Length: 432
Ligand SMILES: Cc1cc2nc3c(=O)[nH]c(=O)nc-3n(C[C@H](O)[C@H](O)[C@H](O)COP(=O)(O)OP(=O)(O)OC[C@H]3O[C@@H](n4cnc5c(N)ncnc54)[C@H](O)[C@@H]3O)c2cc1C
Image 1: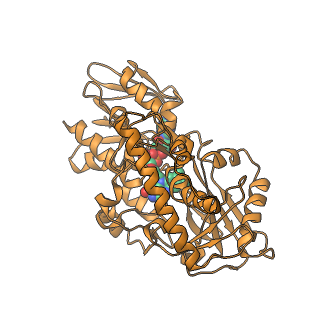
Image 2: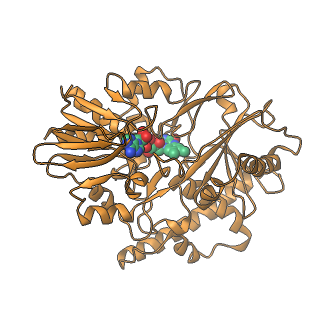
Image 3: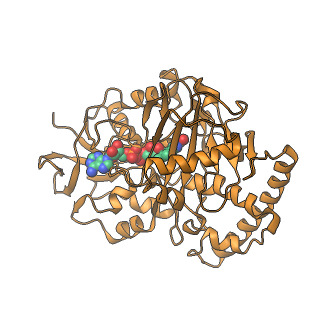
């Protein structure tokens, strides 16, 4: 087959592009480096249960563009909002004492005050063009009361650092939350239970021609066509090409573009940053913790930030907890041995649920930063970057080369549906 369009990368973006072309009667061939489709959607069976090691929630479900596919996949969905959307959670002090409802309410009050000070500082810096300032800089101006410092830090870790996958010092004060996802798509998050994302991914990839184990190394735009060179030396050509690769892969220079990408695009690519959010899945012999909430928070000591735990046992009838790690802590932990990371995590979990919590019977961890085909979890705007940089990195070339990927979609980056829509957009541009 000589496809109308070559697509590099079979993640949500590449698949969204391929389905759009297919719906318009155009042919495509998707080239994927891994031996599986999905990229940062990755469901693995752990302890007998399908667990999502990448994307797990379908955010903003009400008007999410993937909703029709989720319905066709007959997913069993439960509502699973995050605590910042008002979902109940349990919060534990470092000594294991659980905070009362009144204490958590008081914390919300203090945190709302800190947030409004951060927003005021950011507004002032925006107005005076100080786009090089970080959220960490803004926090230094927020004068958090000493007695609340640890708890406010917990809120910032769980709601900002984990959400944007990097530390406050690495996030732009003026632009980090330039993302209207919730209002665009809907206020609630849904969790596919029993299967994870896998059936939805099958729908996303259904009917598409995909070649696995094909590592692209070069893309050259010629007068009449675009040629993709693979690590095997094979070359494939088509009238058009959509590059749907992660930011980290492009930043690492793993794809040689000919001609070189324009300065404006290369500079914008350099300004964005691939953050890190990793997961540590622990399967225990039995459930020895409360089953009434999705989230556990721990007010951790400084060095090991195991502040956020997902209670998968609540939904899957298996004794599973998932620890989430983000930013500098995740980068550091990616270099740890399995023994070290599990030991560190267990000391945190035992603070919450008792020193007699047994050793896990199965463990699975991610290393999204070290993953050669991801090189990060998702992209954010560091100091100096602007939301418009996401448009610049998506700029097409000579009406032949187009770009997609979560990092290119300013309306809802970091999400599966943002990646999918970026693919729909690239395919639409391709169609002219
Ligand atoms: C831990 C974690 C949790 C997340 N949680 C959520 C969540 O709950 N909900 C949500 O909506 N989003 C979540 N996300 C974000 C979401 O997974 C991503 O935004 C989205 O899947 C990215 O899709 P993409 O197509 O842009 O990139 P990818 O999925 O990374 O697809 C790019 C593809 O390109 C391939 N590739 C790389 N290099 C080459 C090469 N040289 N040649 C050929 N192919 C190559 C890769 O293997 C990959 O398949 C999470 C991400 C992570 C890491």
